[in-house]
Image (cartoon, rainbow, N blue to C red):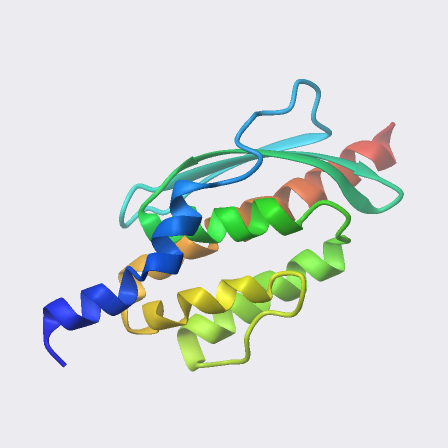
Length: 151
């Protein structure tokens, strides 16, 4: 395949549609935790605010400054994270990482929409950006848990 054909496959219409319509872009006024993560290679950043109730994400906001692939991942995460437990978010992050790095299985529902990013496997320089939203979310869940246990 030619380089142009590979790029067309990588930036599919579905990825571009997800990137253009990222849900939950409003930051939360009083989050239980806020985490900003940056991909050093490309400079993409994602800031996540979340609230947790009874061990589940009850509200979520994000600020996404990333490439189309990172935006698409943030779109899937933002659309599906409310109601999830830490274990579900960790499972999604770990599965996404395995899918990108070693052709692992698609992340489990409700994050199975991340399958659209499978063509990015060969673009290792994009993996960090794709993982930002889930990594920041796991870190925020841990911070919220630590804060509530100290309260």
